[in-house]
Length: 437
Image (cartoon, rainbow, N blue to C red; front, side, top):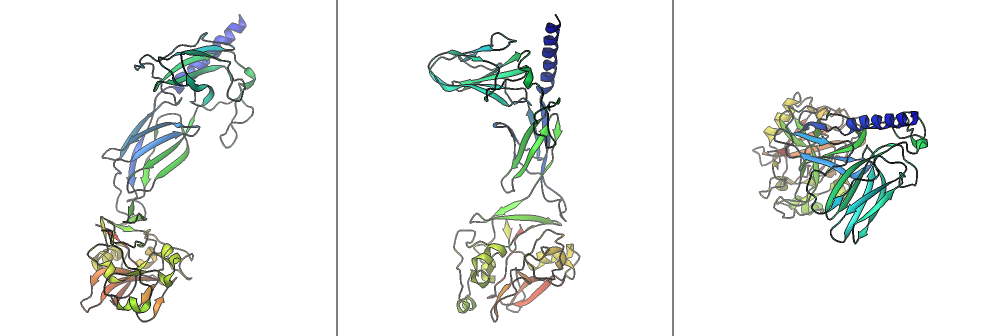
């Protein structure tokens, strides 16, 4: 009689756990861009971003949805991770209730198929983790499988509620079964300091671990790993805007005040319409060019990859457009708006330069508060050739100065001034940073 009471207690206890675990949880939140980070004047919602959850123990178990016009998303989660489709219409394919149920030490699981097909029959625990694959093969007719309450490693499993899932004829069905007074020596499960299962102990974690991934066109993917979801949860996500040029180069972007700027200098070799920009390495040819051209500092492709290409002013302002769609080479006035927002040209340089001496020559007076992350790409001077690598960053404007020359804006390693480049020759070579239309 006492043994019967003990078994009843185990069954009732497990059913209470199942009631909690099989409650429907909600993960919700809002996805916004990085417009409120650094010195940006506000974020915008990311519309139609794909939010996906993957069970880290079983990547085939996933949930997904898209954000709405306000950047909001909501996902319903069943922590056990198994969709019970018994309420659907599975046609003639049937998964029958196991017998006996409850059972000890084994039970029979029967399925009925109407035509030869591939059949997969698996057992899961209440956390949605696969316990054992009972069948995964082509079957010519209906059949039955005996489960002896062991896992894929042949070890006995603890008493409790389990689910068996059968996939056949393009459909899936799930049913519930209860093992009573199972292999008790495997009952105790502990978790070490890392949250991973240990060898012994009294605790059983009732939490699923997920990878959460957010993707959207024009944004860097955002991934969170080892996220425990054991109840309703709110997760707000900030995604970094990107822009892609005609060749598929992807650039990070940052909002400074109300302007969106590239965080990197252009490294494109074609105009927006696909027309090639000539690579001109010869100094004599470079000086003589009256149409668009580009090069790398010192004619080194390694420098081009790190700092971006150097372009003459003709490339910067060519009617074929060097900037990606939705972006353009900034005018004098747009650069001035940036400088004024950062406190004026006399101090803005410190906030624009990438900090440290990985790229800049020491001393580099910089804190990069704006996130603009300027690197010292140097210039190609029509008299001195390549000069200024590591201590000068110079960027074209699209504005002429009325003297047959043009404006640029420059930064130097050892001061905080955001210089005006006056009387710059159009044949010179400088970097290009683009601003969003």
